[in-house]
Image (tube, rainbow, N blue to C red; front, side, top):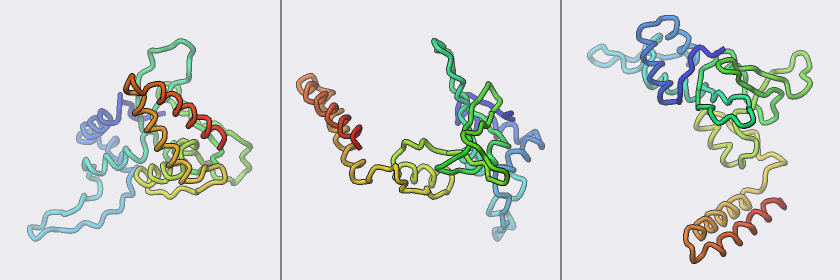
Length: 203
């Protein structure tokens, strides 16, 4: 179960900072998402130059949230257009490591996160999830994992399209989109978009 849920990442940061000032247990829970190893250096005046252990600065809170928060994607219900964006922090879910070949998936029921096996998991096998969309190009996955989790992607994978092909298709898609913006070139834009789509489907 999430120990905090808010209506977006910025709201989550504000609430984390507010509660950490007056709730020791909550602050300790948030600190558990950080590495907890800080060598305290002092200035000439004797003031700490780095966060002291136990202090949840805005920088440390942002880091903990960025690496650990989850979008609470609701279970799809036909015709339901009332779902709102919510994000939350889950201490146990954050213990599950990343893999491009995960053996579990996540699903959320309100503020409860459930991990479900996607294949048979033998005893002693590490439970792993995927932190990114497996359909993302290798370059995009690598950038996302590095910036958010300081991890390297396991690829390129056999399923990945060649990088130069991805770049070429992206470039042509942008050109087609630009053509669509003008009524004079809209038909050419649609034709180019169809060609790009067909070429991508053949990869």
